[in-house]
Length: 177
Ligand SMILES: [Zn+2]
Image (cartoon, rainbow, N blue to C red):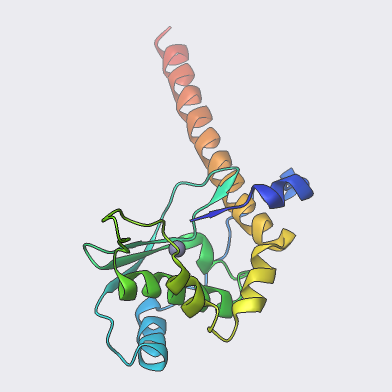
């Protein structure tokens, strides 16, 4: 989970011109990427499930993915399947979540659970080849723009649904009177 308030401060909101179009997906095979990364960076040692997930979209927070350490399942936000998202970014996100599974819960000397990204996590993540490129994309306008297109499209679909059901009710009343 990453806070993107820095992006919102810097850039204006997505205009309404794009909200009527359904975002196009690539339909990536997540397991294939998972297996690739597992062999390349973890010696094939990670045992976990991975799946796309329709996640709630917030205006000021982008949740890309979640790794459930206890059940060993990685959920990737379907927004990352958008054709405008680079494949290398999706791969880096999966690698990030695999690191969570790999390291498990991080407990400090007092027995308290540490915040998500401990020093060891950050050091391992920074060794990933695309690390700098990923950070730059994450801080870009384009990154936020894609999420915002999805959020607005869903909002539009919801409003459309409400309007349709209202119209149906009105038609019913008109018919019966
Ligand atoms: Zn994380």
